[in-house]
Amino acid sequence: MQWLSSILLTLQVISSILVIVLVLLQQGKGADMGAAFGSGSAGSVFGSAGAANFLSRATKWAAIVFFVTTGGLAWVAHHPAGSPIESGIMQGFTAPAKEAAPAGSAVPDVGGSAVPSVPAAPSKGAEPSAPAAAVPAVPPAGDASVPSVPAAPAEKK
Image: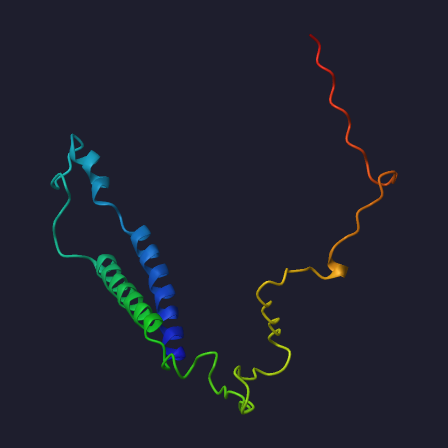
């Protein structure tokens, strides 16, 4: 179907350029209107309504080709060649074989350290404590690296 899209796109570009050129080559029907008033013209006010000439017929067929190729391109864009299942990202993917969990395990093994372990729940009555390394030490009161809080200004009465 890729070749059909290329052919339709080429035909659309050619027909669009042809429509533009043919429209620009044609003489407007209002061009003779000024000459009809007082200049001795024998034609009617809106020009002769005779048979269509070559330029108008060619413009008509170029416009028909343009609209048909537009519809064809829209159809090709919304109906891809293969089905979506056959041409997806996961095409040809096979899942790795899963290992069986040990018989006494309540939680199945998911493949090593990908999932962190859950700590045991604390027993009732025990106070929760943080690990000693996670709690920072309190700096001494006279430490120069810790800035002191400035005193509030005294209010005037």
